[in-house]
Amino acid sequence: MLLATDLDGTFLGGKSSYKQQLYQLIRENKDIRLVFVTGRGLATVIPLLNDPMIPYPDFIICDVGATIVHGHTLEPVEQLQSAIEQKWPGTLKILGQLKDITELKYQEVPQERRCSFYTEQEYIAAKVKLKVTELDCDVIYSSNKFLDVLSAGVNKGSSLVKLVNYLCIDHEDVLVAGDTLNDLAMYKCGFKGVVVGKAEEKLVKATENIANVYLAEFEGAGGILLGLEYFGFISKICKNETLLLQKSPDRSIQLL
Ligand SMILES: [Mg+2]
Image (tube, rainbow, N blue to C red):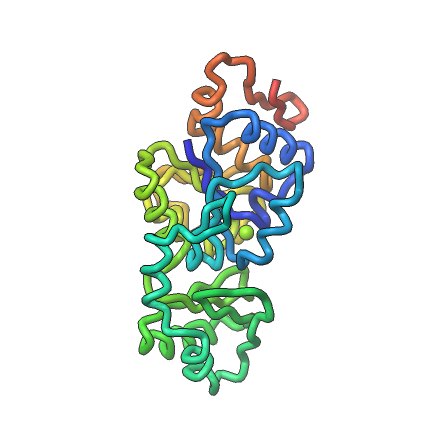
C-alpha cells in the first residue's frame, strides 16, 4: 500500500504514543510506501529526514504539489516535475500581477513553482484568484491564513495522481491523510482518505459527501492509525496477525 500524508497537523501531529506506533508500523513494514505531501518547501522538509524516529519517505511532494522528489536522493522525479515547471509563469510575474493587493503579506519561506502569502481575509483570496487566472494560475486558500498561487491544476491531488500512476500502483491501495483545505484535492481524486481529528472545519464540510472519506476521532498520527484500520490496511499489512490495532476501554489504541 501507499500512505500519502500531509505533515503538519497530520503525520507530525497527535499524541506522541500514536506517533511512535505509526512510525514503527511503517518502519517495520516494507509493504508500506510512504509519501509526504506537504505545503512546506523542500528545504524545510529536510530537517525531518534527519530525525531517526521519523520513517524515511519514498517520495516527497512539497510546495503544495509543485515539487515531486525521490525521498532518498531528493532529486526531482524529472518526468513529473518538468511539466509543472514548464507551466509556472515565475514568481516575478505573479508578484507583478498582485502588486496592487496591499493586504497580501508574502511568506518569507523557501518556495518553488508557487507563490505563497498570508491573508486572514477570505475575500482577498477571491480577488487574487481573479488576477492570477490571467496567468493561468489558481489559488489554494487554507487554515484561514495561507494563500498559495500555483499553476492552474497543480495541487496536492494532481501531483499525487501523477506519482501513483508513475509507480503503477493501484488507486485502491492508496490512503491519503490530511487536516486542512490544501489537502482537499487529494480526497477529490477518488483515493481512500482519512481526515484526522481537529481538522479545519471547512475540510470536514467539503469532504462530507465524498465517497471513501473517513473522519477520524483522533488527531494526527492517531487519526492515520484509525484510517489504516478502517480501510482494512492494518490486517493486510500484518498478515501474520501478530499486530492488531485495538481500541482499549480507555479509548486509546494499541498495537499489540
Ligand atoms: Mg496540515
